[in-house]
Image (cartoon, rainbow, N blue to C red):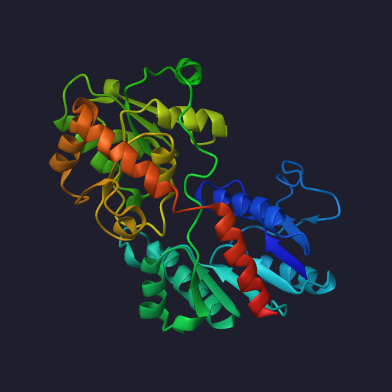
Length: 357
């Protein structure tokens, strides 16, 4: 087969990790097929793949643009693709090639914090993609239920293929942690939040939990956070450090490894990679008990209501100060991570491709 995949979002945080890890592992498990990857002009030279296995195509049309609905279908047909994979919910309207779409979540539809335009655009595009694609992939049973409930997607058309979780992450050495900490101006022993200030990420919970903790408590916030997000920490600015999310993987593993615990208080997630990455690095997790988190994490994280800031604060403090409690969650986290693998994700995705041509 000649398999096409839209890789224009490869440098995004969540979906970018999905695209990069999926392609890397497809090439590892599949020696028979050829892959055609469509890149944003700024990204085409940033990824290196085996010659003869991958054809890189520059796709100048913008993400979420009108142009992508014409340009990608035209190129897919001209290049003789057997299958086209849209790795997020925008499947170009005029795509004639048999297609697969991955819908990671329906956050725009169920979180009232998103505006009318974003909500209705997502609703229209997901409905269209689910109807036109030969195969629909999603990353959790939670999102599959949403697709069936909101769009009447046929259950047998939607395949749940979990992400790989903590693949490639492991506890960093003390030296690596020290180098990372010096680079970002932080001291190991901090609490960690990995995400953004988008409403569903619930950054407010981080600030509120921090206010309820001891004055010596300190949070590192890794991700895109603007001025409005930072205002949540008014009065406790000296107890929080904001760093970017575009880190090398080794630095990210060291960041997880140097943390006393990760707080992941989201209201909505399709899957949620940071908790599993933290667990792979030997860092215990406090996570919200809603959306897909119970499904993905089971009893291997401390679960809390995303609005119960006191419970989060108490759990974080206990994970730092109670060695036996901490060790129990570290052990369970290591076991949980073993249930997820990007290689398994790639093999299951290849099965979907083969069933759709």
